Length: 336
Image (cartoon, rainbow, N blue to C red; front, side, top):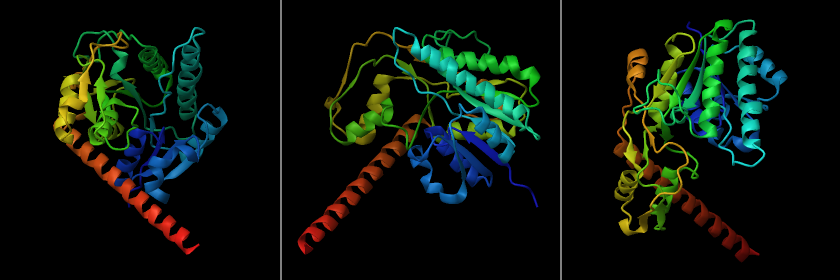
C-alpha cells in the first residue's frame, strides 16, 4: 500500500493556499495547513476534517519547529506573505518586511533543515512584481529591477533562499506567480471588484487603462505548484508561473463588460494615476514548460466567464439566504 504524501502549507487559508489545499486533497495527499486563527479559516471550512489545521503565528520559532517536527512533511509550500503595507515616513513598512517575512523564511528553512526527517522540497511563492522594470517578457535569468517595496522584499527573499541553498538538505524552489484570479479572491483586487460592480449595475472607473497585466487562473497556478512539488528541481530554482500574455486593463474591463452583460457606459477610463509599480507585467512561461511540462490551459475569456458565473451564483445564494432569514424573522414576529 502506497503511503500518502504529507503536505504542509503555510498561508493555507489564503486565496491561493486554500485552492492548493483542495487540489492536494483531491490528489489523495494528507494536508496540514498553518493558519493564524479561526477568524482566517473561512475558505477552509468546506474541507471540514479532511485537513489538519495548525493555529499559530509563524513568527514563533518554537511553534514552527514543533509543527514541522510533528507533521514531518514530505513537501512544504510556503505561501504565507504579508500584504502590501502603506508607506510612512518612518519606513515602518520596510522594517516589517525585513522583520517578519525574511525572518519567517529563515526560521522555516532552519526548522525544516534540522528536522529528524527533512522534507523533500520547499516550494515558495513569489511574484512577477519582483522583475519590475526588467525587459519584457520577464525571464528568470534577468536582473530584477523592482520598483515597489513589495517586489523588492520578495526579491530579497528569493536571493536569501539561494544563498542558503548550499546549507540545506533539500531544494528551495520559487514560483514567481503572475496575477492569479478566480473564485474566493478578495473583492479588494481589481478583477473581482469590477465584476461585482458590473453585476450590481454600479459605475466603475479603470484608473490606469493602459497598464498591462499577465493574468493566470487559479486552477492553472495550482496545477503548476503541484508539479513543482513532484518534479525534483535543482536547488534554488526560480520558475515563472505565467501565461506570457498581458492585456491592457482597458481590454480586461471590456471583457468583463461583455461577460456580465452590463451597460458599457457604466465603466469609464481614467488618464492614469501616478505610476505605482511597473506598467507592464508579463512573464515568459518557457522555463515552466521545459522543467515542469506545464503551460496555462485556461484562456482569459473562459476564466472570466467562469468567474462571472461564480459571482452570480454567490450573489444569488446570498440573496436566497437573506430572504429565508427575513421570512423566518417575520414569522417569529408574527407569532409573538
